[in-house]
Amino acid sequence: MTEPTSAGRAADKQRSEKLVHQLVQQITQEPGKFEPYYELATVLVDLNSYAQAEELLMKALGLFAAQPDAVERLHYGLGNVYYAAQDYPKAIAQFDQLGDQLKGAGYLMIAQSHMANGDHKRALAFALTALTSQPQDVATLQVVAENLLALGNMAQAAQYYDQVLALDAQNGRATFDRGLVAMVQGDPYAQYFDRAKQLDPTYYAQGQKKLVDIEKFIQAQHNQKKE
Image 1 (spheres, rainbow, N blue to C red):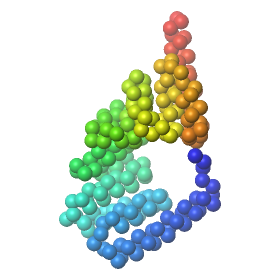
Image 2 (tube, rainbow, N blue to C red; image 1 turned 90 degrees about the vertical axis):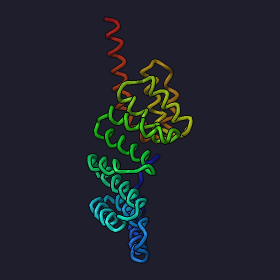
Image 3 (cartoon, rainbow, N blue to C red; image 1 turned 90 degrees about the horizontal axis):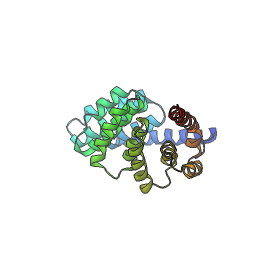
Image 4 (cartoon, rainbow, N blue to C red; image 1 turned 180 degrees about the horizontal axis):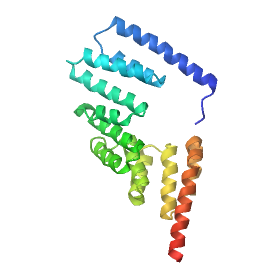
């Protein structure tokens, strides 16, 4: 993974703005469909236009109030707007309203919202709940694993990271974190870091601070045993 260049970012922005224009036209031509509202809000989030996305979805919720499927999808979209804007309490309030159709996805987003707030115990509880309805979902398994790692439950974290990598062997983030778990457990870990560096060099570089913290933790434990 490489960081996009300024020219690449400008091209992405131009494509998004073109898509905004197309979706606005679609809403005008087909006012009875909720999907263009949802898609337009998603594009506005990509453009960091959170207030516009919120306003659009609130309007759509009023327009399609008699359509339960539309209402559920729009609440999910609104939750994603608040999540992207880092307004986690509002995001959780939206995801908490979801019915059976999006319940698993909603629980996952609630877990990620609590995780972003540093509440790993609550995040883990919601991630495990999400897992009951989508047990093979890589994103859900990874959120469970990441919270177990944050809570220091290495044995269980290893099990969930292994499930993630069995389903998605090219997952550089999970590969690096699995190396951290192996390191703490005293298992061979170098192969995980080597592979993570190839798969996701950006996350590998960001993870060096984690690596230093883990090494300090292990050294402190070692010193305690010697005393």
